[in-house]
Length: 224
Length: 224
DNA sequence: CGCGGCTTTGATGTTCATCAAGTAAAGTGG
DNA sequence: CCACTTTACTTGATGAACATCAAAGCCGCG
Image: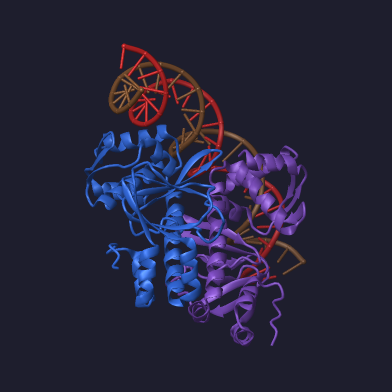
């Protein structure tokens, strides 16, 4: 009867806005699914029939364009990964795939819509959560694209350092993916990483990154 | 008792989702306001207490950053100009000002929230409309920033041509604003416009623009 | 009239993309 | 397990796209 998603933000929306007897319905309609790294969770162009939420792990949101693949955002747990425009369209305009082995929660979109129709408190919370998620992605994107290459790279490194809560970590995306994330060529991304290494701000052996001088890295991030 | 916003999308949301007796409450709580060109409608950093909708005219959404002013989008009638993150935060993270003399409709945000809480159908429609508006802005932005300067300029010209439904029009923004919209320097924006003029694709005397060769302009827009 | 802001053009420098080449790592079939 | 292929990564050289600096013309406004 109790869901095991102890820290689940979506659950908290349901629980604080649903009567006790409705919670059970939520629990039973919810499906949990484990996905492996590199698995595609959402495919651009597919019909939107589910409401998907990342419980554990790390994912990337990306879209394929004539100019190549473009990473829109990296999704952490407690981000509603399918929030970006779930209700806007019939079909996904982006894909989502797992960067690490992850666990997702899946709800039928109909169920969520039903809740919105029946439960104002739920609707209100959902709108707020959706807006926050979209805002974060959008304004984050705007901020990033005001910076030059080196600043964006510094941002990426600081971002993952924040996620892993450590100055030493394995970056979960390839150089190519970094280039798709920052919107520049792979060669120049590598050059920027090399520059940071040569200047003694980071150590970088393949995917393993160590931040040596976080303050200077933050300054580069800030002042582009 | 009847609202005069005959074509108002917001009104249509209310009307199709409210019982007749509630419509009156909506009408009375709604305030219509005329604003002059260059008037600031929403100011970045201000508390969000109202729900604002563009009934007539043209506005720009922009934000001020340490690197200068950045235009996020141009808002036409039937765009919910305050939709972008109304519920996400306490304060606006962007400004809105009128490009032309415009008419806006203003609702107390409390009133809208109340409707969301009380009326599921209204909530559902609002979510859908918000998502669509945000999607359009966001993915439009992503598309634009994959293009080179000349393609973005072509896009801007085609955009306003679409708005005014004519190949001859006065562009409602300055060269500087175009540069803030496409995210490049004013000098290079001017050079790009000059190039289009020299190549015979457009005529351009100050703010007056005439599209001569729409097909080629579209090709430039499309293929960056 | 003259001041300040907007616009335009030219010259020059920086940032980034492209092309080319080579190394390392990782999967693939015999 | 090893040769083989493929994919990811790295560095250098060159060129294109864009920013910056400088100067001058235009235009509206006090």
